[in-house]
Image (cartoon, rainbow, N blue to C red):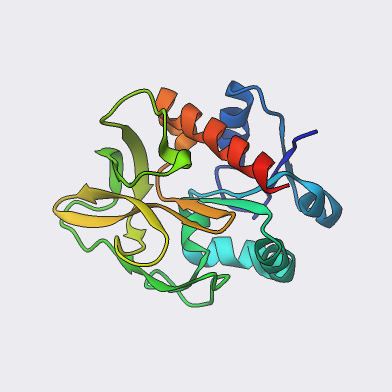
Length: 202
């Protein structure tokens, strides 16, 4: 039976993410229990926190998450959870999980943070299929992001003239800078696509 484990990082929108999965008929559990995280169909690293706070919350789970990635078991990072997949960030000291050989950069725009809706410019990928519209808009809340170019980037978005990575995939590990749990029907379809992908990875 499929299961979703949301990592309790001590800082993040884990209850909002849990509600998002409930809206697509999937029960998600907020946990730090290692056995639960190992067994889950999908592990989610939530956002709405700083890079440093998120990485501190993952520190004692790093080896478990890296092993999960290496085994091709599904991981989804949302917002700061996406950024935590990278090596480092302009936002603060400390190291991320290092699954992405890139540094998270400040958007550096006059209008920061970026809080609101932006359009996804996407590549063809099952995760971003059937979003209900040819012109999908999703909700963001951030001041930092990964560059829009590089290995694994599936979609970009723009704020105040700055383009940044909005979605990426490295094997069974996926990151999105937007908040699917706050993005209405488009976000719910993305979460459904993510579950279908996770179930396919075993």
